[in-house]
Image (cartoon, rainbow, N blue to C red; front, side, top):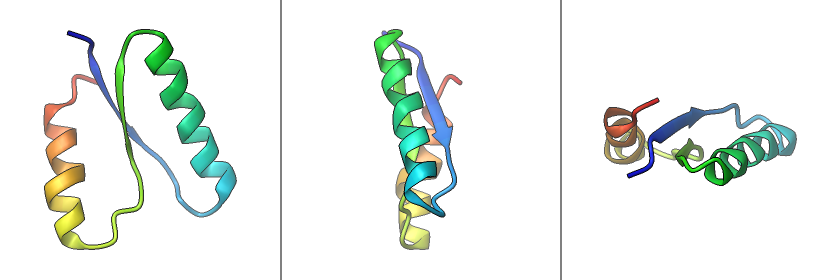
Length: 59
């Protein structure tokens, strides 16, 4: 099972989102399972998705 990597990124502009995507793609190609924490619109998104993925990440 591949190691899960939690990626936190800025969301100010397209460039920051592209960097997170590039890092995620690179990690996938290296055999990891990346999770990019982007676009949380509500506290429910943070609680259900981001925090849950952070807790289950290896890196």
